[in-house]
Length: 111
Image (cartoon, helix red, strand yellow):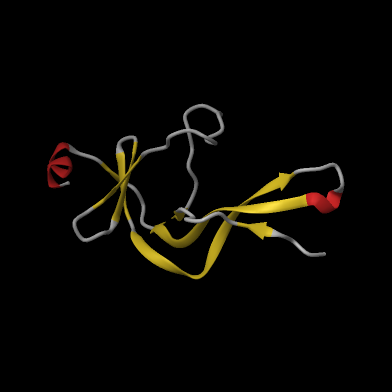
């Protein structure tokens, strides 16, 4: 089976975020589509994630093989008319593998 993938002009570049462990909320609500924190970059280009009263320091790593975000586009009823459009390309990931540290007043001044 042949899969047709189309793209139009400039394709945005996304970054993937990798956490170690679990993200938990006080309630049992799903996190899909919700803001979980603030992402910043320091003067050296390293990512800093602030989630609630915790801060995580990470690093940027290029992916060995880029990933593509695609969307399924169906124009007609027959299954053969299904096309896939390229939404974005993922070339790097932000890795946060250290435990989160609590934010205290003095630490905020250093950011």
